[in-house]
Image (tube, rainbow, N blue to C red):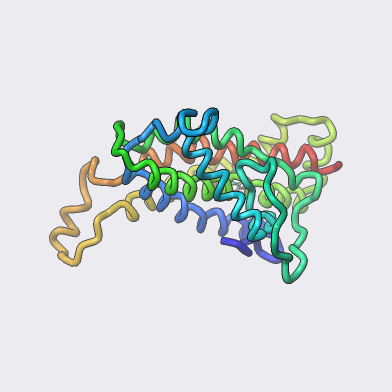
Length: 257
Ligand SMILES: O=C(O)C(=O)C[C@]1(C(=O)O)C=C[C@@H](O)C=C1
């Protein structure tokens, strides 16, 4: 949520935020999975060349921009071109925690492409239930949660840079992407993230009943979860974490400008 960025950036505090954001992402996945795939919502037939999903997100971002949502550096729009100026002014100047030249790192296009072309098919049931309006409304919430998490990589990278500038500066100067990627990677942390996301998908996807017996019957076997917990972990492993790392590398490459 807004104001989630801690006053003093530490690796622990930014990781805490990433953990909280898992809840929103997993919950939004479950909400979107209540609908069928509804592929037509993503083709360009609505307002050619825009899909219904694109139309819905663009119009939502126009309202958000007017309300001043993008004055918050955590908020990154998918379609930043032609967004209107805010109609409100911030009560206090926003905190400057990101390096200005790096703050502009943006992978929204990749998120959009991966989401509409690959991700939706992984966690929704094939078919069309006709309810495209509710579908794109759930897409918006999920896309925003994913984008926030992935672009949070900017804050993660800033902390890592401040904690060890002498390690990062030579790699940045020689534009060593592979070296940077290695230096910012913690394989054990990634593994915990995936396991935790799997567990959250299991917990949030369960039917909560007041009947203890029914509750117990609920805890075995596959196919009873609204989103396969393994699929939730896979979405993190294949896309969310790699894109967060890409954001970190791109951020660091601009960090000395
Ligand atoms: O926790 C970190 O250090 C991060 O950079 C975040 C993250 C992730 O996306 O979850 C990405 C890279 C690391 O290898 C571990 C985890």
